[in-house]
Image (cartoon, rainbow, N blue to C red; front, side):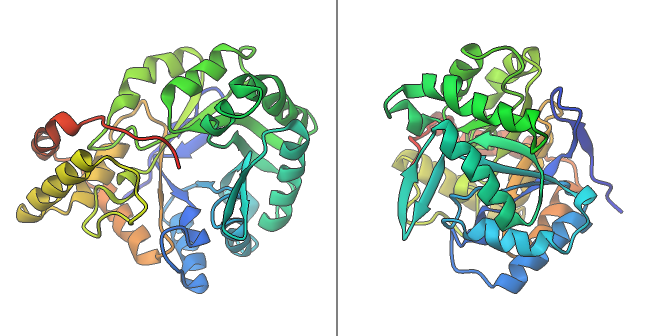
Length: 318
């Protein structure tokens, strides 16, 4: 039976599973969910050895935290490491952002209530690129949002503090403009997968700063899947077409691209954990089975050759 590999998350002292559970799907972000099956998906992840669970008040505009909380109330607290976020929210289908220190601290309290816990292991400032275009820019994250979260850490309400973003340069800017050790973890998505491995260029930087790295979206938000992308996917057309061709190539080989993508994402020992999201327990079991096998490096090479010039094409966050 496959035993989940655990890896050190920077200098936090936490040991996290190589594959972890992202709870965005529990908010119905991609499609409507069956709440009972979604809760079963959380149980299945824990039973399979995943110990890091990541969520945000933004996912489903508070729904993901609410549904996850129903699951967590039935799981012993020492069985999971819980990550949630501040800064990005929404109501009645409208996105909102507030990176003030006051709102960040209030948000943590609200998340703990929804999640049914009295302690958050990891608290992240969510998608900092949005604050980059607001008054105060990224300097506000460095001067106000993060210090407010550090206050909560000093009070024992949160364990570790970090930041998330699609744009790697933004993550590095904030780290370079805050006291050493303030940013303990970083969550980045869609930059260590079959069609975009840009995160690899930054691994030494994060390691040198003692920062624990969490990779998310190994399927690049559906680009690397048989099901394909949702209509709102922001990827440029050349990348969408290249991934479609790569998916077809894997299909002809009898090797689903999801299988290859999951194996590739967890194969780098310098990336402590990779998050994937599903509200379907069958998908959780399938991904656990995928990563129990070694990655087919030759097929990775073939796929990346097909993607060719579209490798590392990215987009702005939405």
